[in-house]
Length: 78
Image 1: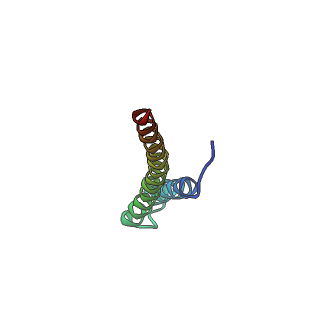
Image 2 (image 1 turned 180 degrees about the vertical axis):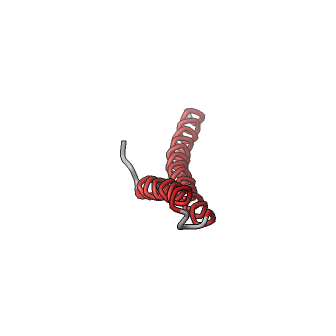
Image 3 (image 1 turned 60 degrees about the vertical axis):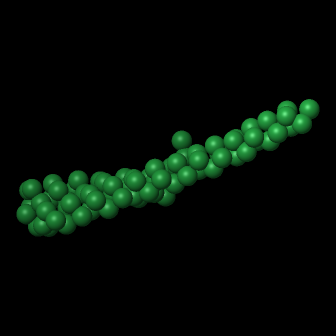
């Protein structure tokens, strides 16, 4: 499975969010808003990864439908 840059960034920010939450719980250093901000950023990268994957899938489907329409036009002409 090929990981793209969005997947890698998602995992980096997700792990960073978990570390920040534990740091908040045990060390009381960052605020909870900072921990939640990192979590939201990681979720945005995950959403962008899904959108770019779906865009690629839609492009493949579009090409398939164009070929199928051409096949129907050829069959109609015969």
